[in-house]
Length: 178
Figure 1 (cartoon, one colour):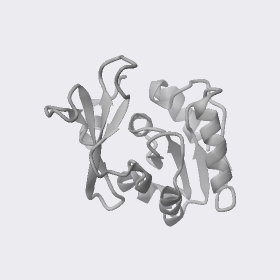
Figure 2 (cartoon, one colour):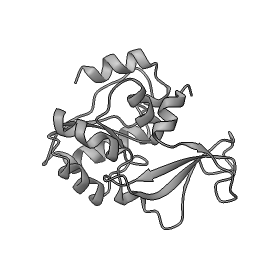
Figure 3 (cartoon, one colour):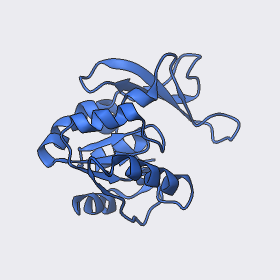
């Protein structure tokens, strides 16, 4: 998908050599302090037969925001956070030079993830789940309802369905507009 080696190195992303994550890109997950808490594996095989993502045993995705360890200082200084679905979306934003972005591992925001957002000091949340008429939009609506009493919530329109597939220059200009 065009991620630079520098971005993949920054996030310690690599290909699995083990059985549990065989034929998957392995994505280490860290808490907001940079402590390793588990990993996720993205399927490399284009098939409906295999789940797109799997998580390591005992890793509960509802307790973490992907990339928060790198994003927290940028969130504090800007008072805003971009909320995206996946690690790939976080990498694309970072590649575009936007660093106040975190991933929620899907299209729903847990209560624990909301608490993590509240602790960042952000006052504005820009929801950037996939821009399709199906799950991405439904997820964005539920997330907005959950956050609207605590944050200024924005759900913009974007010309690409998935941030991870959007060109860097277009993504940069889009994200800078907030």
